[in-house]
Length: 426
Image (cartoon, rainbow, N blue to C red; front, side, top):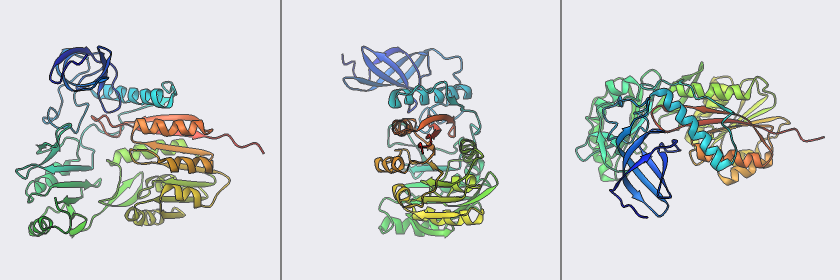
């Protein structure tokens, strides 16, 4: 039965699933509820409905979870950047563990509840993030998008970000001429790079006008570089991060983890899964600037790290050299590395693909290479479970699975899985 968008229904919220919504049922339909915690009795307004699915927003909490809290952020009711502001930290960790267990149960058809390690509160809940992307509203104010909307919620602070964002970077961004979007990247010391985007791109009139105005502005000493639509306006886009005692240079436009503490926790877990036995070759796929190759590569006979982003690979090459890691940096797709890299008798593959997971061709070439050990890092529980399921079906055994909370107060959850393959009979 169609209830109707805008109608309100009473529900008992179930477990949280990927994306941060709680699961419920109403008249035989699955209901995904935003803003509810497991076990709560709520009144929810329907915002979308199909023949089999309802999406709803909690509008009144009739019976609250004992660990519900008042959101610390004043923008939480409007901004779509956070999912779990209303949950105490230990409950957030429990929900993320549940998200991973549910994804592996439904997608990989593997029960991993007893195997799950973590998550722990290794990353501070607030003040740790080093990257943010903002949009500008019609009045030229920077802000974040409202959930499921293109409307911009203007902000004067973001509690997730490192202090220098609030103290110097955002105040400067609020004085800029009206760019379309902007990203800020900070290192662990508070130094920043700002990347601006115009509506018409690097060759348009809007870009030229905004670039001229921005060049004429003074900027805080903490902002080491500014670029617009990929074109440098001032300073340098390079940032240097110190992770577990290693220094990694990163282009402000290249991918890197969202916080220093998060990168350190990820390296710690991955390194623990690799273990002390590091003979043979390490293949680091989707390597970016070399976080895993640099921090986990010591002890291997040979290291090969590759990424399709040539800009990232330029820094990857330097990061290997400056940290004393003997190895190759290759600008190529992951499947090319798997096909062409020299083979060793014992190989460990570590891979950290984008949110969409491994492409089919990468899974196929990885299976064909048959490495003894795979450490798979995933920033999406669903695609991570899918990729692990393929590897299990191809002969690897799931030995360990860790859940990491690298992005507190959001539904974003990271997994690191260790898969091993029995040696072929001689």
